[in-house]
Length: 394
Ligand code: FEO
Image (cartoon, rainbow, N blue to C red; front, top):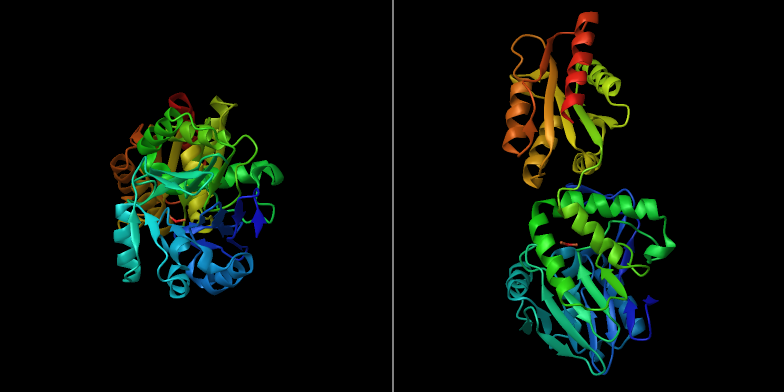
C-alpha cells in the first residue's frame, strides 16, 4: 500500500518475478507491477485490479486498507486480465458493486468472465461525482484495446491512464523521480515500441484531445510501473515524439547465421558503414541469441535496418523470421532497409527478407548482397563496399 496523497492509495502488486508477459510475446527483464488505486472521497472507488494469480493476495491486502463493503464503484479502465484478473474473486465478496467501464469494456468483461455483474457504461465526457472531486472519463479506444479508457480525478489532478504511459518495471519506489531515469526511459520506450507502435496515429489524436482539455496534471498513474510525479508531462511529450516517426541516428544490423558466414558479412558491412559515417550508431544483433522485444525496440529507434540470414530450405532462419513477422505487425514507418546473406546453392534468403521488409512498409534501398558459402577476402571487400553504399543512403 502506498498513499499518493490523503485521498488516493496505491493498492496494486509489484511482480518482481515476471520475465514473460502476454504469454511469451513480451520480455520483462525488470519485472512489472499491476497498479490498482483506491480513491476515498465521500464515495469510495477502486480503479482496476491485478492479474489473476495475485487475486487472493490483492484482496487480502485491500481488506487491510478498507472494508470492501465501503467500495461504491469499481472502475475498469481496461478489461485485459492483468487488470481485471482479480474481479471474479472480488465480486464474490461485493457482488452488487457497480463496475464503470466503456461499452466495449462491458462486452469484453462479459466475454472473459461470463458473469452478470452490474455495469455502468461510460463514454468520453461522462463524470462520476465522488463528493469533493469527480472522475472524468476519456475513452482511449485501441490504445491498446477497443475497451481502453482513462479516468481523470479532478481536484487532485491525477490521470489514471491505464496501459498508456506504463512500463514493465518493478520498483518499490513507485515514483519516476525515485528510480534510475535511464532504466525508466528504456522500459517506457520498449513498452511503446512493442505495444503502441501500430496505434501511433491514434496516440497523436488522443494526446491532442487530452491537451485540448487543458486539465492540470499533478500525476499520471499508469497501470504498470512507476507513477509519473515529477514533471509528469514528460512522458506525454515522449509519446508524442515516439508516435511521430521517432528515429535516432542508428543503423541496426540483424542477422541469423548457421556457421558464421552471415555473421562475418554483418561485421564487414558494419565496418563499411563506419568507414563512411563516423557519427552513426551501429548495433549488431544475432537474432538467435538476442531478446526479440529488445531487438524491436532497437528497430524502433533506427533510421535503417539491415537484415541478413543464411538460406535454409529455400527460406530464412527461424529467429530472423520471427523478427520479420513481428515487424510486419508493428508497422514501423519511414525506415530504410537492406538485406544480405550467405548461401550454399539456391540462395533465396535475401529475396525472402527483402519481400518481407517491403510488405512491412520499409523502403528497401537496393537489391541486397548475397555471397556463396564463406566470404573470402574479395567477399569481405564486397561487404565493406556494400556498407559504404548503405552509409550514403542513411
Ligand atoms: Fe496491461 Fe492491456 O493490459
